View 1 (spheres, helix red, strand yellow):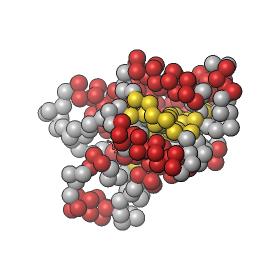
View 2 (cartoon, helix red, strand yellow):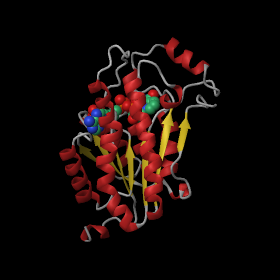
View 3 (cartoon, helix red, strand yellow):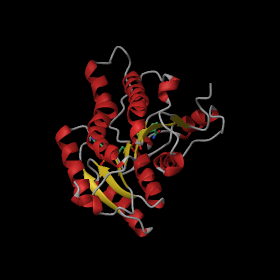
View 4 (cartoon, protein in one colour):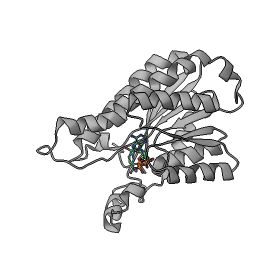
Length: 255
Ligand SMILES: NC(=O)c1ccc[n+]([C@@H]2O[C@H](COP(=O)([O-])OP(=O)(O)OC[C@H]3O[C@@H](n4cnc5c(N)ncnc54)[C@H](OP(=O)(O)O)[C@@H]3O)[C@@H](O)[C@H]2O)c1
């Protein structure tokens, strides 16, 4: 570990989970625009992840790809070692990856369905935080940014497994913020509204307009809107911000 500390000390390194597309891809390019070296994690779609790396390198940034299932302990161990071998450090951890989010009624819902969501939003954050925090603590600087969701505030029906797991992710954020604050590590959560990404290709214009009508700013957001908030929280500009949930949803959850 000591030997790798000398590598790239002028550039911070971020690991972004689920960065081959959607919000994770936009977060990766926004961090790279801020001069951060990015470890682009993906699970299956290497071609898409390659496009993210190419976009970053074409703009003068630095990124490499790291395939891993971030819900699997052995693969997280290997991911951590691979990023360390390539870049020498991880200063910023962005917990963004998601699997399918099926709509299920209470009658249909099984315990396994809840576990499926907890794998992504509780287990994976736990596995990764336990890996990166010791070094962050030693350096006295670190950033953990969870990508949560407005569904916790909205209590979206037929999504209780997803809502419960996103609520738990907020709980981790708040508790870890107190625990890690004395060590110079901030922990925050960005809660997007509905941001159409590749996985929403089947959504109709009517559905999008219906959602946008209820948003105070009157339109849908973009992955870049979410990425800006993550990049801010990952930067020195957010040095006195921790344990917070920042909604990026045009005011949709205004009380
Ligand atoms: N988009 C929205 O409207 C919205 C709203 C609120 C919150 N969010 C949250 O924002 C985050 C990103 O959502 P998104 O819409 O951008 O999702 P997305 O477009 O479906 O992208 C999911 C990403 O996760 C990766 N992934 C899937 N399984 C993985 C695994 N086991 N290990 C590592 N990576 C894995 C995928 O990689 P491969 O393609 O390689 O499989 C892909 O890069 C999620 O936490 C989601 O809950 C999104």
